[in-house]
Image 1 (tube, one colour):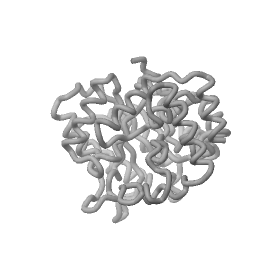
Image 2 (cartoon, one colour; image 1 turned 60 degrees about the vertical axis):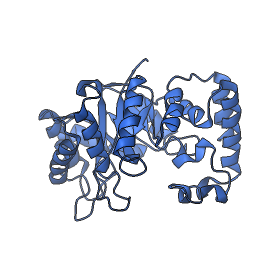
Image 3 (cartoon, rainbow, N blue to C red; image 1 turned 90 degrees about the horizontal axis):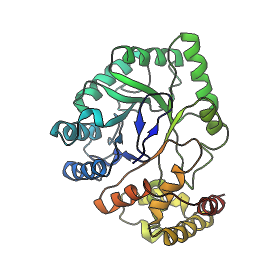
Length: 316
């Protein structure tokens, strides 16, 4: 499987990234281990997590996803150098454990390293903008982590084009390295958060792009067609914004292309993102081996120009 260069970070990743937000939530440790084993056996190499995953689940406090990944790494299923570990800082863990201050970044990275049971993080991202902390302070703190060898590359998430450009300016003013990767929300339904100015800036500045919500919380799998389909599902309450004429038009196009390719709507939805200019790799999650096969198939599927155009026009 051909790996893709992640911007100017020196990291190479497979065309799909496993989203670790499900670890410790809808996938327990045993299931998570099985999913990671299969994912890496198939030739993929990158896992995305965050300190805040999965704090929203009953009884969790945050860090559960990183802990499971760390336990899996310690078990020795793959060599540490063969895995690209992405995690994030800045989410709200409560008790003033949030944001991108130099003090919190220095503490949070130690917590993540301990949970991951490793001495370095391949890619460390600023999870959300922090209006209370200057970009210069955050970038200087990240630069220090790189100097210490605790982090190989840095990036950000959930910034628009203006905010990303501001971080470039801040890095130059502070005389430190910039963010070389961004993680925006992007899928067939939600396109405006990346396409346009942000996509153009990323391509111009050679910024690696790992997009999240590839399946729009599961809507693009095609299993949600009405309110009744959402009942009793973990993400059912997230479906309401998608249940409209445009959403159904997208599902129809996905099903048509899935029939042409002998795959599934989920596979096609992920492959469409991977085919977009400027995208390094989409992030997608799975909670069962059956779901994981759709993700794996997406990394191996090359859509035709006509199929990409059909999907793009359906989601306009």
